[in-house]
Length: 455
Image (tube, rainbow, N blue to C red; front, side, top):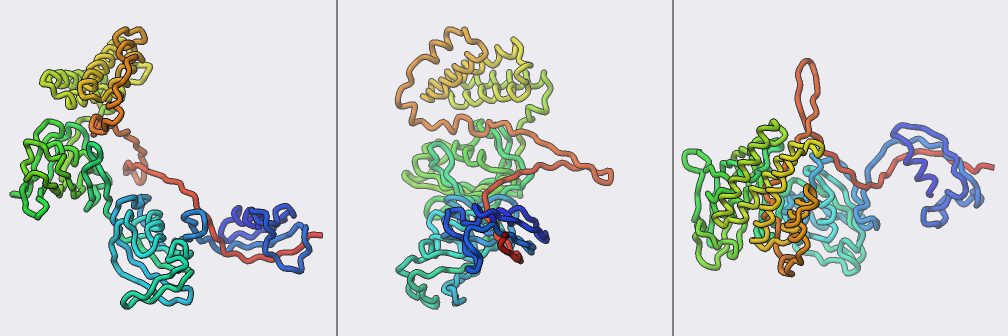
């Protein structure tokens, strides 16, 4: 009944209230008559005396009542597994009469491949680590009208059976594609420290790594001797491109396994058999990033940006256009992070125009025409009458530029915002950051009520 649902949704657990529901809200939302006692005349307003005893969260996962989830124990945090992730779960699937058809304590599966029945992957995607839930699974998300025969010690699932499943998400390993053209497969074996730093361009990192061929033979083993991590600076050609791409996706304290295909191993710093893919297990022990622009004075930020531009000029002269582009773009980021729009005077404008022109030239040399177009338009933002920028921005882009991956150009160059809240308690202070998520849910309430017809 539409009016009854509206009444319940306005209440808190333990509340008692009297509601008068007009006749136009006595039906269901779809317009069908509500299920009410036959001795109540039709087309009547109704009065309900309701006491709301408790609230139980029920999630209609696909909004078709095919998979209903009742959370019986909330998990930790807000993160949920996605796409290619590998999850570890406990479960017990039963029929309506309580007969168990399958159960396991600790089974791992890939979400993209699924497990047991279609409902499992769909449900796990909505859960947080440690969460426990009971699912009601309709046949279309179970074993359909054909059912499932008995397998080993597991009972058969009759045709058209509804399943009742206890499910616990114990943990998961995040799996994703990274790098240029998303050709490198990353599996997170241990998450990084929640307060640890993300690796940024030109960070100094300390790692422990093991590189293996397809047959398991170790070809690279650094950072394990004498407990001293192997240190290098990102984007300074001290290690192979694939190792730089890998650590730029990591947070301090994280351990991850990277699978690298043969086409990404054409690098003089990585010598492996032709046509062989490799794996790298990397433990990111430490990260020291450049000083955050928000912590710089005006003079410091101008000097830092100018230094990045000089580094870019040297790299450009050596025809290392990608690394040069990154330096110019980082110089731009430093200035834009430190100066508000109203603080950008003539000197700062000239710096930004110089960065943009040089970055555009690098992008053109690389064939990243869309990025070149954006940089020329950035020049016009600060100098609308700039003839060269007008001419270059007005050029048609070669069609090939549309298929070029631009992710590598800005990898590790994002300026993270620093957001702080300070709390005082017993003369001690601490800072913390907070993240919030919002998602739709349906709520089922247990209530006692009496009702009657209003005359």
